[in-house]
Length: 185
Length: 185
Image (cartoon, rainbow over all chains, first blue to last red; front, top):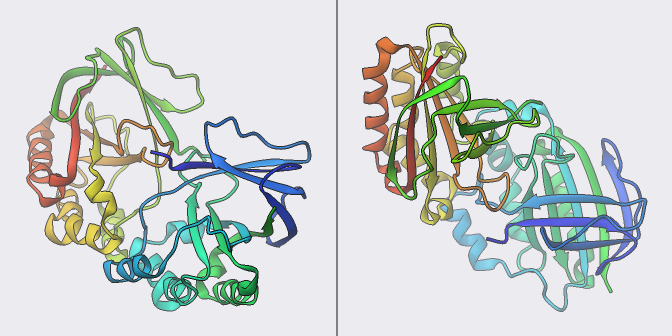
């Protein structure tokens, strides 16, 4: 298993930070670069001010069989040569979200917010991966690290995608939201 | 947050081991006692042969709003004075389970295996708590630590409860299953 990844913000890394914007909650210290690597490979935060986030890939929590089949048919992997743009969006949802039963969370996420359908619309151009943090320990600063990769030509479509998600009912439950745009060097 | 707990099997602890049975997969070394404590309080495995498991409480992954309301109405907390019997059942599910989409897992868990309904039938006599391990790291030995507390008079009902769960379709996906019965000293 290689499910656990670290995201080290600092002065060095493959990904150069082009912008960072805090949309909700506490911000992160500004950094120049980001290194993404499997955990346990000695990754540490870069020169101060730096930060180290970690997340674990997991099974789908809300996706139905039909949706999973459509996602599998359309999506392409991370690391495509043309995908020189990326975004890291760490997110936290509030206590009201986590207190909801599963069917209510699914209803808000997909039936009322079109979360999965919106993502599908931008495949394969915008590749995505979700890393979970909430269950790693009791003191993680975020619930999720969301990761996107796309070609420079698709930058406007990425703006559309995140604007659509942020306008959704689901996002009313997001209480920490930081968007870090990146380019691969 | 106090969501992370450790389960230290060894020679000391509040809970005395009365029996241990491996139903599937690799067994754990036999121990005389179990200490359950919030993580970070210095809990360590007891004198060798010992083991240390850890799990984190979380939001419900499959429970609907209706079911959650019925559970909340019927359940009572852990630690009741009369509940001098307990069981720790660490479980792991196989890769086929985790590859299923959410709706298929829910269908197997409740619609075809009555997992939630079976648990409800034994409330409030048998108190339960589920600890998640799978997302703590990439190398946990189990996916879940399931915990049950009940009075000695309800021992037969507890046998019934676990037999009903193990006979279900859901359990075909369980590939490691160890049942440790305990009494409070």
